[in-house]
Image (cartoon, rainbow, N blue to C red; front, side):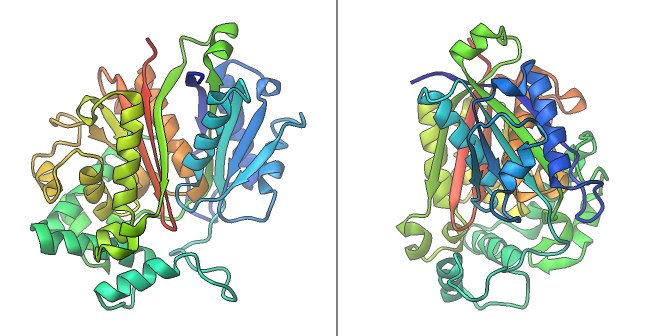
Length: 396
């Protein structure tokens, strides 16, 4: 199998729906042109493209890339809920790793509506019906938006089983908002006090508004290339290697373990993380920087355990030690501000994570830079479900 490298990344600023100038083809053109320029190649060097989005008509991916060039390459549209961008990256890497392409483009975009996510098709089976049924068996359904209710229920389960408190989840919201003040691409760049995070409007206890990711508009892109392509185009100075990657979908434990934590994908994340680290041949303790799926602060805390950063039931101890921010004993988690503060345009999120980690391993993250970063891990999850974990390393 071929070694695979990210050689170019780019993204737009993420913004509140309805406020961003232009339309999705404009945003994809900006992100794609940045990625191509970052790689130092031409769009005509790209052999395949994988375009991720959740809100849009069929073949929006083709329309999105027309602004980059009409070269006739295959364009595959990808929709995997919140892990759509990472799923596009997964497919691009598969094409290169398997020798089907020397250079592939993964891009993601979203033009969203304000407010909580809702159901678009009411005349057919909802893909989340089994998840909601499993959750209702565990605790009564409340008058709250579905997504924060599902992840908030998982947070409540952790509190009841292991003794974590609302303050632990609030600290994660505070941390990520604090990180994003140094990210010019972030939707929010306001630094809040911990009390402001705690006292914000409650969405579903223990989650307040400032612990929930917003809907967002924007785009991001990454170019994946083979080692041969890297050498032929003299790209070694900018190449970051994908040394491990895995995608895992729902398992029996998602629905049969009587656990809200598993309903929202903890077991998927656990298996995907283990598989990706196994391929990378490193341990989680060697990872310096992580971008993980903090759609809600509860999910960041739960993912600490799923990825092996903490033992089961002990993630809140990492919070108490302030281990996952700059100056802490653990890897810096979500230096970009994460989904909570950077924003969450579903199709673009995974590729924004990839962009951030590429900049980190190149030493190009400016005020967000994690000094000496050698290994990075990306975690992106979509309910319904798909967890994608990607491990990056500086090439040897």
